[in-house]
Image 1 (cartoon, rainbow, N blue to C red):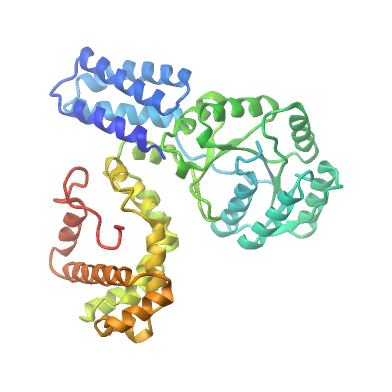
Image 2: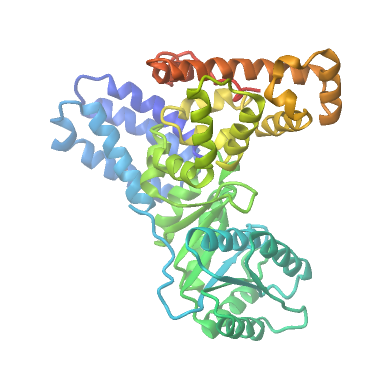
Amino acid sequence: MFNNLSERLEGTLKRLRGHGRLTEDNIQETLREVRMALLEADVALPVVKQFIADVRERALGEEVMKSLSPGQAFVKVVRDELMRVMGEANDGLDLRVRPPAVVMVAGLQGSGKTTSVAKLGRWLREREGKKVLTVSADVYRPAAIDQLETLAAEVEVGFQPTQSSDDPVAAVERAVEAARTGYYDVLLVDTAGRMHVDEGMMDEVQRLQSAVSPVETLFVVDSMTGQDAVNTAQAFTDALPLTGAILTKTDGDARGGAALSIRYTTGKPIKFLGVGEKTEALEPFHPDRIASRILGMGDVLSLVEEAERSVDQDEAQQLADKLKKGKSFDLEDMRQQMSQIGQMGGMAGLMDKMPGMGNVTEQMKGQVDDRQVARQIAIINSMTPRERRRPDVINGSRKRRIAGGAGMQVQDVNRLLKQHKQMQKMMKQMKKKGGMQQLMSQLGGGGGMPGGGGGLPPGMGR
């Protein structure tokens, strides 16, 4: 997400950083380029106009013009304004009511409502320690009810059955009672959607709103619909007392215009981002971190939080102890590392959060393929325990057997073994004095990732 916008803004602002002093002329030129970048990212025109006006006012003030580093001061102004447009800080769910707290999810058909309900259920259970019940008010589509039941089982939350003959309001009221008697903390209500905004749908969600008085009414919107996302958000805002939005399919949206427009247009905060198809692919929306990501500064806080949740600390310590004792990094260790990368959102997700990778990510898209990581894990799984511990015993006949067991070619096995040797060398470097600096140099070519040569570390490439 934001790749196109990030690339344009980074190039524009990098040129400005080189100026010893800023003038009205070079600020005007830069703002013209920023304006074009925002419009190409499908940011709503009123948002662009206000954003440029606010940046210009601050950029021509003493804060920037009298700064010792005016170029950097200007970049800070742009970052601060991006944060202000998107909402300053994360606005979480307010569940401080007598249980069950009812959270209603609304939006158009196909926007990802049902999947978002499941993701939210998982997030509340794992991160907040909540006991969650779900219910589908989409009684017009039995497949939607079945989908929610399947997903609820997958994420290990409760499911209240409904029938196609049910009245949606009566069905949700029964679910509220079931949540109360079952001592659930949160009830998530998946409402019916339509292909477009119509009177019938709005009337139904308004009746549901009146009947169960949810503490949170979240609007789910597909980020890839661009300007339509903003228009739809406005229609729902006019009809319902929305408390926030969930922006879905952001992993497929390189522009990011919806994220920059919804808060300004509707006055409602974006609370979560859907960053993939899997049920764990839901992130709280942090405007400050997103602003840093857009400007190529990365998102180290989110990266650290993801690592703390996903990385098995015992396994990591065991590997560190093993290497300290002089033992080699074997294929079993490599498999564990690859699995943990997958749990942290995959290679592309990691690169998106790494500082300085904004303008590199697109160049490396072809090399970063999470499916390749899955294939490499399959190859290692096809090996015997002895082969994983002692890769040197893998001869030609063993390679053919391993390739056949994984459904791959022998050259795929050879490529994996070559990458493993490269990773062994990297691990040895990390043991030496200054090894971490050498490793970072390999990552970015001289310590500075953007434009420094270098390349992907072994195992991250194709």
